[in-house]
Image 1 (tube, one colour):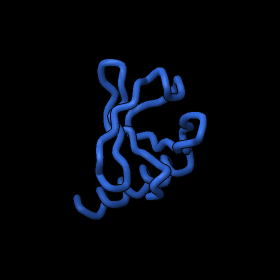
Image 2: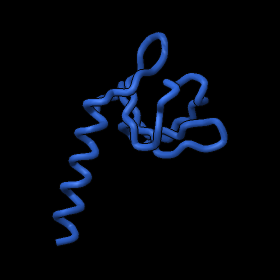
Image 3: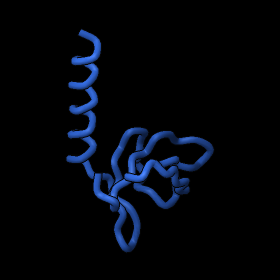
Image 4: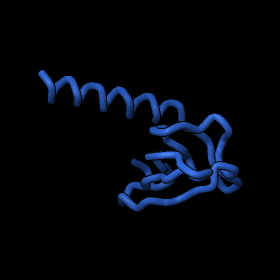
Length: 73
């Protein structure tokens, strides 16, 4: 995953807990994120804030689904 992307691991108490490519957890206030953010979304870091990367999120979900099918045959 590109260093400019984060994955929203959980949303709790007005903050999104996001993981970067080095597995660091970064806490971001929800007020700084798009209003429709949800857990497991991939967000891109921009100069002026964050956006949800719909394509990366979808690809990541597909990869997880495929891995699950392989593991639980």
